[in-house]
Length: 444
Image 1 (cartoon, rainbow, N blue to C red):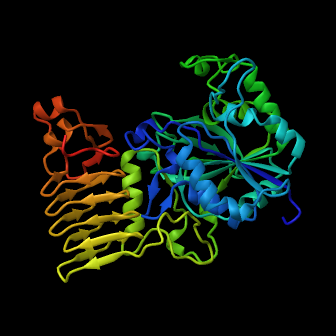
Image 2 (image 1 turned 180 degrees about the vertical axis):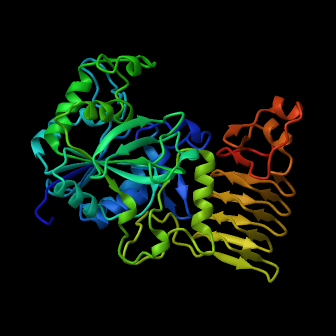
Image 3 (image 1 turned 30 degrees about the vertical axis):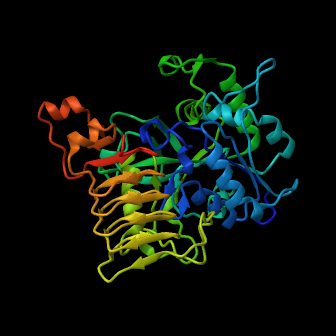
């Protein structure tokens, strides 16, 4: 594969509504994870480690912190030249307007059609920017070329009960895709495994000509923001890859579309237990659970794998510091610049730069950076966003009605909990997660 020319797009422009309030001030791929990283670091590191050197990120929603992470954490390795680059690319303004907009994931790529046509790569990759996993994309590339595919979809086995928010694939024995449903209410299981189905990871490998043809076909349809595109797919579109372009490609009998099983591959240095590990950071609960998997005593993937490093921008060069013999830190990740003084931290992640004062207790929680946790404060199953100072003796996650009344977001069983529900007798489960928004003022 050394002579193959590639171009990669990373889709990073989505609003991330299911992650509110964490996406009120940042793009979804820029959300901190595992203490020192951002979610975007995983796909960009996979790209670099896979020797892909031409990368475009079509940015849109609140791109500031994302652009900064790319500039400080990744740009120096890629450099700036015609042969090797990583560029953020905002939407092109229509004539006579100051601002442009990407109207969907397909439109984000379509606005770069002239670049694709000019470079004429052997493979055009399209990756999602909000997933946590490790993969050598050279395996993906090899599978795509060996199957002489117009489009290859990277896929992973998933529980049917949890697959409704993904695109679900149906394949024949050769691996050719013969059916696709975007976010079905009743996902179709695998014939040989009724508890699992095959879901799209949102990663695609294309021949560039079929890609441009399918994008042009989609652009010729009338854009809508309702369900008319499902009823009349040849007339209407939401300009979305999974919802519109992939089904349209499958309806074309001339197209060769295959699914590549992600679980076939391991990156160098990975253990067998890491096979098939992929997480979509799409909801508060999936974000929380993924962080907890990464901080575990035996984490789901090895963050210390020197053969497949996850590169990032480290915000502080200061060391972490633990003061007093009463300090207790168990099964946790503590990032640079954090000072813990006489406090208890269990099964939690403390991100860059902060202080946890005497007698405070942080259990099963994510503290996202630049925080002060005052003396005696109690935090349980919470996500505390950046620049929050928790006053001494305060509690988070223990009194749900109090937390909702303060404007915190509570998520339980996939649902946001409202104050009326609690006053009507609803009782949150032990899995409830409390989210404190950025820069919340406990003194107000």
